[in-house]
Figure 1 (cartoon, rainbow, N blue to C red):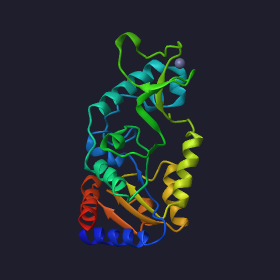
Figure 2 (cartoon, rainbow, N blue to C red):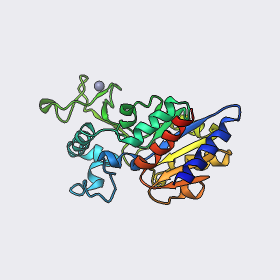
Figure 3 (cartoon, rainbow, N blue to C red):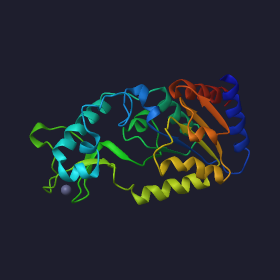
Figure 4 (cartoon, rainbow, N blue to C red):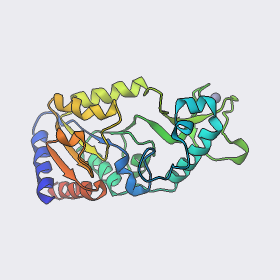
Length: 250
Ligand SMILES: [Zn+2]
């Protein structure tokens, strides 16, 4: 592993010698697993008592918003009671040290911001926030038994500020992250299953535009196949090792 970390350091140095150093980190559910956040479709079974189609899809929102809210409230509780782990802190440190300019995440848990990351693109939204489909008001979710499922002051039912399955991703953020991916010359892919499109295609797009790709993942995904360096293992253990070495070199 140390040898692989050294390979990443050489890559970073090589890219840094070019005029513009443009790097981003792409993260997925694997980075939050050590914080106790299960993946919705994951093997951990925490959501097994719910039928996914009934609670997390756009159809569910239209047909039975109460049930959807019951499900999300449980998820939000879990998030609010969890903490960022060493991988989130390592990502924040990369940004702080100038080794990446943006974090693109598929997670809706807000843990990157809590770890100190500043420039975060949440392509699937943020579960700890509510949004009003009527007036557009956004606010942190606060449970109130007398207003649950929560309603906006305009009278409309609020919804979690996340992209539900069956909905398309917001076009503004999508065009932003695609432009980041296109112009980057280095990408760190951390803990993403590489299965959820179109976001999973970002590293491929970067690669086609000659970016170097470094992948940290427990499993060998399709991203590992295009990686210049693939570091297999738990990202909360591997990523901090890279950051540690980068700090020593500064
Ligand atoms: Zn409203």
